[in-house]
Image (cartoon, rainbow, N blue to C red; front, side, top):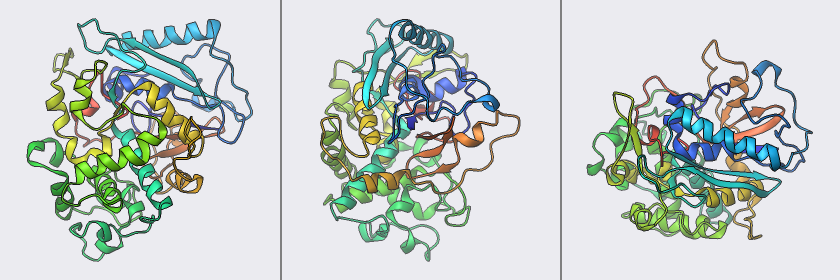
Amino acid sequence: MKKFGSAYDGVYPDYSRVSRRTALRAGAAGLTAFALAAAGFGQHSTTAQDATPDAPPPSDTMPDLTAVAPLPLTGERLATFEAYIAAKLAEMGIPGASVAVVQGGAVAFLQGFGVREIDRPDPITADTLLRIGSVTKSFSSLLSATLIDAGWLGWETPLVDLLPGFAIADADLTPRLTVSDAFSASTGLPRRDWEIILDPDKLTPELVVASMVTLPLTAPYGEQFQYNNQMVATGGFAAAVADGGSPDDLGRAYAITLRERVLDPIGMPRSTLSLTDVVADDDHATPHAQNLAGSFHSLSPLEDNAWIVPVAPTGGLWSSAREMASYVQTELGRGVAPDGVRVVSAANLERTWQPGVAFPAPPPGGPAITATLAQHYALGWISGAFAGSGWFRTAAPPSASRPRSPSCRRGTSASWC
């Protein structure tokens, strides 16, 4: 069994309690991601338990659930599950969440909780659009996989073959960096989000790619996990150019290619990178942030959107629990969408899950399970193990120097960060 979702606090979550701080990072759709589960990835196993769906038992006593059959989410178990979600939202001060559960390849639960904007009555539904944040990275690696199937590029295609203006500070390493490297978090480039967040109005996708040469290299190639959004964005834009997009209009090229190769084939017509489309939709959530006094307030969607546009392949997609459930079904179906259409070959999809660079050891003092939950980074996925089963998720790792960007602090519309 493989389980897909978002961890509330990056690489090393504490599953004994979801704190207010980590809830702000995950936001409303984070609960959606955390609830996404499946009862079989080529096996007949699940982590479903007959007990109340509360926090997992202590890490050192976690049983091996590899051969445990899934239990239906009905009756008293369903009522307990719904009450648990509502209670956690109240505890963490999150205005709303949209939750989907995929079990046995089918959608077993789909429901909205709370409201789209604080102090307003409009309810969150299963179709409410929320930004899915860093889960977009897995869409970008999936997009690349579809283009490899089509013969337009390979995992080892040099990025400079697609984006001639691309360069990093090491002139010898530049021509060696490939499409797979862009999603691997191991190129030697550190996290440098402030360059994007502080002055986004002056950035374009083309300028982001051109600016890569100014970023320092702080680790040897392929040896250390370092999360760099500019590099992932470059990978997504390179894929779009491989599909015939203009290198002079990378944002539009990526949006078109993602729509044609991934979103439409999976059956995600409302999922979008366009804030204009989101605002025009009657069912979308509003971004929120917490002020210095600890109170939530809504944010301007335009202001909140500005910094993500130049690096859209890293976190720009908006979606709903219903359409994200279709995405999970496609991943669990090894590339086959819910309607039976093959979106990507199993071989190239599985390449995006292949463990790559190892994570550093978790901070001391935490539960032992954290070391198994996040063992390696794949291509837009974090891989590890949980209760005897494989575990994959997409999330941004914690860092002492990590910027508190808008996408990591919203209460509603914040997502999967």
